[in-house]
Image 1 (tube, helix red, strand yellow):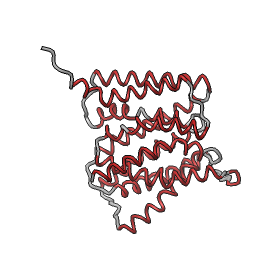
Image 2 (cartoon, rainbow, N blue to C red):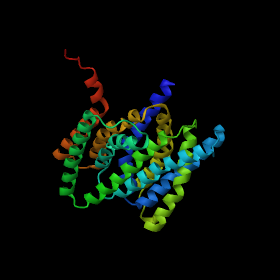
Image 3 (cartoon, rainbow, N blue to C red):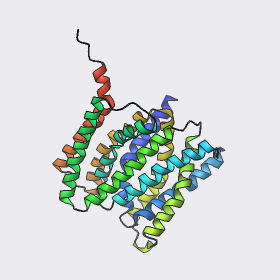
Length: 298
């Protein structure tokens, strides 16, 4: 079982590292609401086919419907606001802000899962990470006034993604990860369709460029189907904090990819802010363990 979990974990790291750039590219010539709708449709069609071929049932019990609904909160809310923010932010900055989800998940878990309140170490970690976010945000706003809109949108996406992961962990059910994926996508697609209809509602396919279409295809197959499948799989097998650790690694890769493949600027303030965010996340994950290992005095 260790190997499948490791492979799924690595797949999520790679996919999440490339997803922000894919979102930016897919939204270049396709409206964000339509791009994310197309992505989800592309994911659900082969997903249903695989379920039928592998004879995987889609449970419709109350607990199953609850987990689909909770998962949909992260899929719809997290993705919609991420796509909308791509009009204002670089892919690296989007990934960096999403890296704060472990901290927000921890705060939400206190209310939803009745987990213990933050220790002094975790409060310090939260302070350091937020200081890093402030450095990054002020620098981005100084470079581009529209960034404040993008930052607000991506923070909404982080909130929905974080609360979804915590709520999913509150449901005790033995369900195949692919069933969870397809269930969440089934709940999400109508919502994405409504969002596209009311926000844009047009289909100017003459303006679409190859890079946007290829990005949508990549995100549909890997970002949604494979990515969600792997994510829900490890979410069932590992602790929420361990899964959230992925968001510590992906911003670094996303920043590098954005700079190399999309010529995104990487300023000194961005690097400093990113370093503070990473230090805050590292302190959040391991600070308490280091403290516990210190020898007692007297």
